[in-house]
Image 1 (cartoon, rainbow, N blue to C red):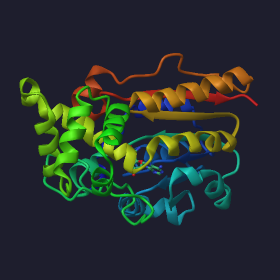
Image 2: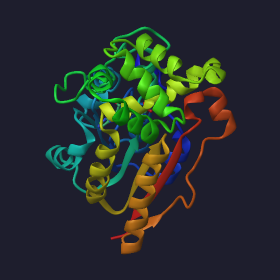
Image 3: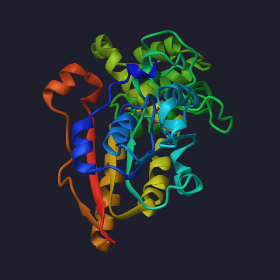
Length: 298
Ligand SMILES: C[S@@+](CC[C@H](N)C(=O)[O-])C[C@H]1O[C@@H](n2cnc3c(N)ncnc32)[C@H](O)[C@@H]1O
């Protein structure tokens, strides 16, 4: 199931991380384990990889995939939010690591299989939590039904960069309660000016992304996790982040700059690395990917 997800920019990540046999490293967003596998291979035969994911279902798949490596003590998988990385890593013997990788957002598993309302392509209940066992998170339905049009518009503009946010938000408010992906899609479509309704799918994609980011509080999690990941790196260790949204990329860029200004980092990607056309042709989800990597100096 999660192997549906094609890892993005794997060769570029491996090249920039420069992992060698025996290294310890962390994959903060394991999902189906595409990048984890590359890290396991690069650090053979004695290196260790710690993998985290907030979604217990994808981790089940990864546990199966890395059964032999887990048994050999080379892979440790933990169901956790990466905001807990600084406690979890030392608890599993990962102290000064060679690399930490974040590959942000949702995966093909979430869009194509999970059945949790990440996409409007199928009619599903509106949930969108990465961790459906986490009762502290609102579901997407809770969120869109609880907020008024003003607050919904702020979320849709900020996290979805949708220009018709205000009208869409009013349409959502007028249709509350909304319980399914089809109902949310219909509210988006009805909120658009008639002339652009034919491309409602584009606006809906932006609205669904915005709601997902808000439900999982994704930007707060990233801001909290970057300094923790940094503190885990040994001298010469690398922090790599693959982001898919301009706000995420801005957070990463400013964190790296701050470290460089403090004199403790060297940015290895002056401009973010983007996938080649042929990668995007084979894997359209790679299209908006931006990779930034930074090395810890001291
Ligand atoms: C794009 S996928 C990673 C794909 C993976 N690198 C691969 O190539 O197979 C992102 C994963 O991050 C997880 N995730 C999102 N936010 C998280 C968080 N705050 N803590 C831990 N995992 C998170 C999601 O559940 C999802 O499985």
